[in-house]
Structures are given as structure tokens and as C-alpha cells.
Image (tube, rainbow, N blue to C red; front, side, top):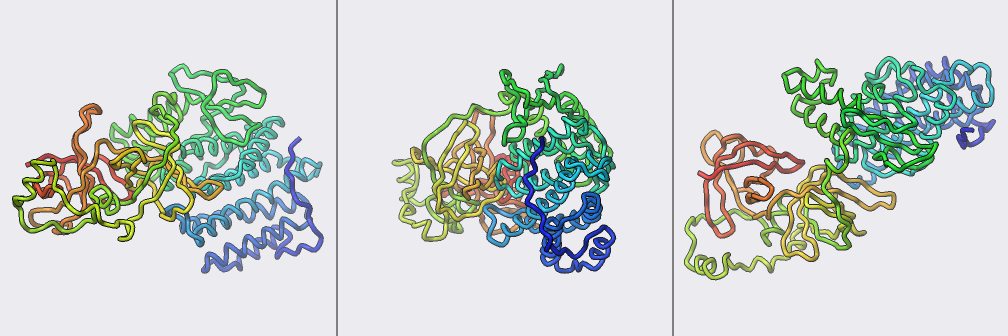
Length: 540
């Protein structure tokens, strides 16, 4: 039997409305000019309604009346968290708590209705599938808000989702199509489609998708999730697509299907149909069709859609051994610095400054190069931390040739963003490894965890400026990083430059640490992050 663990109602609860008509009138008077006040007012009235004893049919009418206004306010309020670095500051975190709290309150309202149905209220006899679908939807929205914000959540949220889906399945309600009609969603969605959509979105988030990509994926999954069934047996795909697994008795989401896993609580998601759909859309995009023609919306360009579709197919439909390098657990710490200026400073052992006007290498520098292979300077005496260049201690939890998983030690205060440039120096190494933030989240204990992707080669700090006429960037030198060619990985040399600085064919002057100067022509943009761009170049 489904246990919803609801608090008892109280007779002295006094919401502003007690029926659907009164709710509609109240919503018509709700002032929306002050978003925070409107959000707080709505939450307060909904919580008061959830404490009020009402019939299930009356409560259901009110909840359905509230749905559209709640969805609009939540979307607008969530926009305040867009592109925020982690961890969120106090004000931003309070917004996240408020948003997840309102989704929770909506879920509780529908759970009260479902409990009334279970207890035998005759007027809800035809609403069982709708109630299950709504409970799954709002429980899923609560989970997804944590996922979008990159904050871990209590596993009890998964336990409730699994229990609700199991109830719908046990009572033959999971495939019944229910009207949705909000936020561009399909006209109808079943309990199974809502459930699989949440499972797949959370599983895809592990691949390091940004908040913007997750929002695009959310719109896609409202249409695609109907193509994925939930099976009791592991049905292997004939075209090599894998199946994913969820344990309805667990406090976790979707997992890779284990060959030896058994139990009545296990369910499998065969990915063959979705794999075929992703490959077809990829091919049609490559052949020139637009995202709009393929029902992919207007949220991203053809190039961005292709990258996201390939990422999803890799993560959902291909065996883990083919998409990830082998990770090895480690027990060491490392120092991390952030951003172009910070990485330059710690790699060069000095802050960036405009190079001297003299172009020739002086006699002393030439002798030092001949003897030591580099120019000897006093830059190691710079107190970079004292100059404002942050360098924090992180624990290296595991590592591969391609990257590492890190956990920041208590005391760190820097905020980092998705695809931000950073450099890591393990305690047993003398040099920094350049990388970029692939994914990140804040643990339940408040620590920042991140996965970083290494950029190949040992970076050198250089100064760079544009040459020529009609420049769209400054003619002053800027900090840049030079990555050498890595023949073992078939990777050519590249430049790490500030974001929005790249222009194909632009000729730049590069000053190396030994004061050597060279001219180079930019080729193509290889990679773009939050605060950097990696580009190919050729010497002139």
C-alpha cells in the first residue's frame, strides 16, 4: 500500500479560497509586479490550503486552477538563478529553496487528493490516473530544480517518486494519457512518460550538461519520453543500444543495467527506440534540416543541437566502457587556481603585465637561456595569494588520463562556473595541469564537488596582442596560454585565449616567457568555455 506520510489537517486553517471559483477570483487579484512578493503570497496560501480540511474533489478543482499561475511564476523566478556560479550566495540559495518549496507544496496538495481517493472518496473514482500523474510531475519538478541548481537532494525524493510510479503500475494507471497543456508540453502525458522523462533528464545531467542545455532537454523529453517503456525484464537492443535500470526500492535514480541484478523491484528502460530517434535527427541535421523542422525548438542552433544529440546518445545509449576513460581512485590533494588571469599567474609564477618594448633578448637573458634553458627571474618571490590570485585545496577523489573528480576542502570560498578555466597542481607534481569544469554540484554537507576535463599538454604562459587594422579587440597585450602539440593524442598545438577574442585568420603577436616573439595566424575555434576559447593556430 502506498504511504504518503501527510500531516493531518487542522480545523483552524484559513486559506483565502476554499473552492475553484474562489481560487480563480483570488488569482485575478494577485499582484504580479513584485515577483518575490507574489511568489511568497502564493506559497503561503497554498500551504494554508494544504492544512485545511476539504473534500478531495474540491481540493482537486483548486489545484488544477492554480497550475498555470504557479508554472508562470516559477519559470520567472527560476530565471534569477540562470548562469550563476556555485556555490550560490545567500540570496540566490533562498530563491532555490523557495522554488523547490512551492513545487513541494503543489505536490502535497495533489497527494492529499490521492490519499482521499485511496481512502475511498467516490467523487474521485475517475481521477486516479490524473492524481498519480500530477503527483509524479510535481515530485519530478522538485527534483529537477535541485538538478538545475546543481545541488544534491535527499534520496527520499526518489523514494517517493518510485513509490508513486509503483502504485500507478500496480493499479494499471501508468499508461493512461492525461491532459497536461502547460509550458509547451504535449496535450497528454502518461504516468510512465512523466517518470521516464525525470529519470532520463537526471541521468543525462551527469554528463556535464549546462543549465541551458538541461532546459532544452526538458522540452525535448516531454515529447520523447513516450518512446521509452518501463519493462520488468532487461530487453537487449538488437542494434547495440543498452538498457538502463532503476530500482524502485532504492533512493537513487537511473543506473547502468547490471547483468547479474535481480529482484521484483527492478525496472528497465530499453533505449533502442530512443537511440534510433537520436541518430535519425542527427543525420537529418547534418543533411541541412533545421532544428525547427525536426521539432527541436528554437532554443539552440543546428551546431548546438548536433553536439547535444551526440552527447545524449553517448550517455544514454552506449556502454560506459566506450564513453569514459578508466577512473582510478586516488588519495591525494591538489591546488586549484581559476580563470585566465589566475591560471596565467600560477603557471608563470607572476601576475600578467604588458611586455617590455624591447624586442631583442638582452645578453644576460641569452646567457641564462643557454645555461639553464630559461630566463631566471625573481618571480617566485611574488605572493600571488596576497595579490588576490585565489588558489584553493581540493581532494582528488579519482582521476583518469582525461580528467579528475574533485572535492573542495572546507574553507574554500571561490565560486566557479560550468566550463570555467582552471589549473590543477597535484601535491606530488611541480607543474599545473590546465583544465575546464565539466560538471559540478554542492553536496548535502555544503561542499563543492566538480569534474574537470584536462586540456592536453603542459601550458606555457604567454602575452598576446592582435595586429593589423580595423581590430575588433584591444591592441594591448592580453594574458594567454600556449598548449604544445601532443603527438601521442594526435593533438596539434593550440592557444587558450580570452572568450570573444577569436577571429578566424586574425594575425597575433605572441611573446613567450624568454621574450621570444612570433607571429601566428588563428585557425578554427576548437573549444569554447565560460571565460576562454581554445583555438588552433599556425606560425607565420
